Image (cartoon, rainbow, N blue to C red):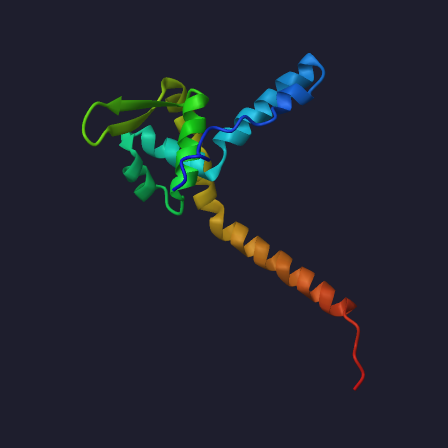
Length: 148
């Protein structure tokens, strides 16, 4: 993996684009919600609130995440104050990630959110299929009839 492109990106902050103090407050909230509501962030926080976790353990437990995305997400969560990274002076170095008290406070909300998603997964799948069927039928009605 390239070591040159794994740093925490300094994104153009939505806060800087907001002109009034009230708009800045709303933009800040949206920025924070965007960060913690990502599927990778939620997975990492759910694991690390149970206790310290090493990189490879997170890689195994957060299904589907790439090494690069795990690295970027860990660094962003650390930057946001939601994770603490501890490096132990061993060979090879041992690194653990632990949820901060702020992240532990967020845990209950994440459990509620993931529980809601699991409870309604089949309903959402059914609604999507129904929507797609209606859309396909509407498109079929509009399709030109080719004469042979």
